[in-house]
Length: 239
Image (cartoon, rainbow, N blue to C red; front, side, top):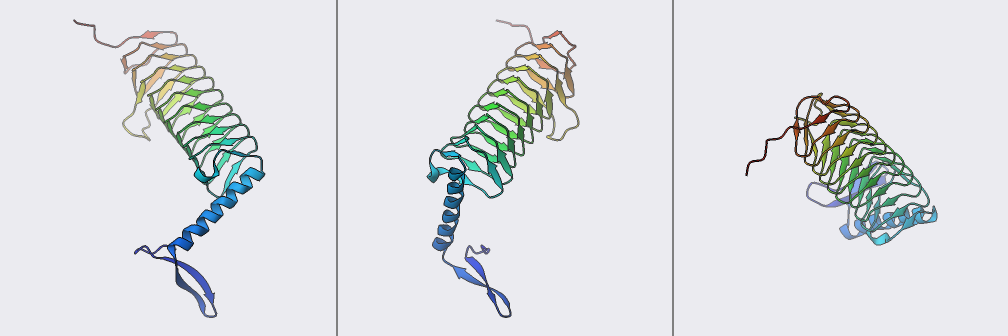
């Protein structure tokens, strides 16, 4: 226990109940470090490849399968399951998530999410409350929240996707965003299979882009795009 004033106590059992007695902060953190090392030892014995045990933190209530690589600086939070042949880190954070076989997560933050097989996250991504289907690529510095991403989809870097549903084989251009007023807004963006979203496009919810629909780069789209149609919504150039 850590009191409001920062002192550390442990409970000891007495004949008439428990009593809190002070503990040295150094002893307290030595015990935590010893427990961390025990967890790392258990992973290594289970067939997990640990790049540098001094820079890795693993919480209890986690499951990491053999053949997975945990690189330096990675933190695995509680209630996380990571399957075989994944590459996690360096400097990744994963908590409360289910990561399937062959996923690669580099220097990214993943919480309360589900990844199917062979999902690849480039560095500096932030994914929360999201399901990503198999063989999807997410470029660097992308944020995805409260969304579903279909299989074989390619999301380029610096994108922002919130409260959206992307179908299969969608091409989502660099810097493109879905626009919602709130994280739990009932209005969603739905993008059909094989749609192409150009770079720096803004999709304003509620919005549906039909299968094989195409949104031109730099457009701000507020009306639905029919299947197979090209949507252009930008001012004419003036020099």
